[in-house]
Image (tube, rainbow, N blue to C red):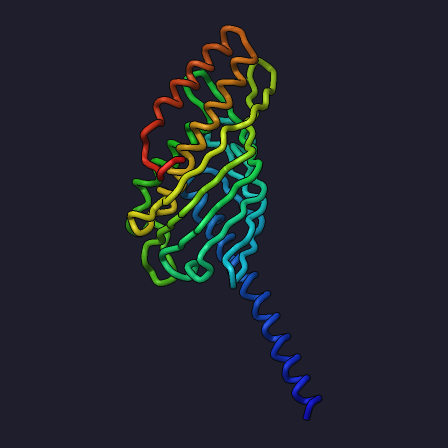
Amino acid sequence: MKKILLIALGTVALLALVAYVTLQFFLGSIVKAGVNKFGPTITQTAVNLEGASISPLSGAGTLTGLTVANPAGWSPRNAFALGRVHVDMEPFSVFGDHIVINEIVIEAPEFSYETKIVSSNINDLLKNIEKSMGAQSGSQQPKAKNGQPLKLEIKKFVLRDGKVTLGVAGTAVTMPMPPIELTNLGTAEGGITPAAVTFAVMRSVTASVVTASTEALSKVGGTSGAAAAEAAKQAGEAIKGWFGGKKK
């Protein structure tokens, strides 16, 4: 009898482990598939997330290898690569139409800033995202499995230890980015569209990239560097006050 009980308990434990691993893989697959499917429709560029692992119990996990390509008209390089993104979400909200993310922490992202004095790859990417906010309505808007429009809520967003590489006058200059912290994205609205969330985040990211690039340009020196620095400063001023969450 004791032996049978031990076998039964062992079987239950094994099944629980298999269920946990399967659900963890399943949640990660949902997140990965969602990013790779909807990302390009928001940025109008290639977006690729290599992997995602989400705990079905805590909702904590990691996204790896997220890259976003440059907009049309710029080099074939990536606009940025995030590497590892730590997330803490309400684990089963991913199955509904209102996904709640308690915290996103992006550590050591790498941005490539290209400028043609009056424009930049990052600013063009931001423009693409802004356009998608208006275009993604009705049948074009991402939907959950229940058919309702997908909405996101991010209670805390943190980006730190980022760096920007700027190529100008044949010289590549890398500068650290100011940290970014946003709170309560979509909280008051009961969730906002993925495009709106991306725009809110990228607005602040763009300002941070511009700040770092302005410092890099000032180090390069020369007339072209000074002119580009002034253009970058003006671009930063232009995006202040745009839609977004509360910035700390």
